Image 1 (tube, rainbow, N blue to C red):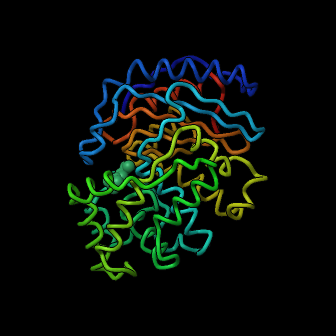
Image 2 (spheres, rainbow, N blue to C red):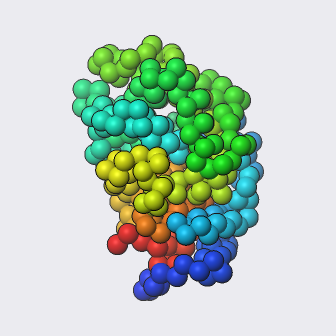
Length: 316
Ligand code: GLN
């Protein structure tokens, strides 16, 4: 757990474009100044080529304000942020899919084989890797291409035609990965996969390798906040559940710390992106590649904490 960087009372909520821009610019400045204390992921060698100094920040409100600071239209590797869109894609087809993935927080982080083993192969939630493998597996069975379905959904929601699955990143993870293989074999041993292990893993790596920009992501996730958009994407019950599970599990082992410091449902990825939503108000997204020990972007968390505090964005 890290010490909160902001002290003092939270601001009252201010939603005008210029005020949001001011908060976003200050948040980005603060995030950028601490980013270098983290380290770019070592799990996926191809991602080490990314500029560690890149920094993007964006906000989208339900009223239609959209703004970006820094590298806000640069494509980056979404990694675990795709788990959110994969879950949405699956729930669109199979609204009761929760029963296969659960919704409890993890105690041991996103890649724990121990936790999965102890639960007889039942994942904690759709955002730990074991749960995400189940989501990808079911989506593959329903559609024939999980990565195709998730990319299409993201392009539709974000309007970002540059979104694509980066084959070099997928191949790099496939070559270096042992943990997801272990998780997939535990799932298969317990009879929880519908497709062969190698097929599921191939789809999963390609899905994690999907790219997006912070501007596209903030726009693409607006359905989490905008009740008018809800029904075009998913039923309200499922949106409410997704927001709840993002708050308790979207940031892995750090979810409690993030709820305490930021107070927004959020999803991170080892590419350095973090996406957060304030139901009824809007979405906010940060990208900065260096990560902390939990696998969350150091600069992204700091920037979001500052933004949430100064703009008064919190569910509490
Ligand atoms: N592809 C990564 C993995 O499976 C995604 C993890 C993450 O972004 N937290 O380990």
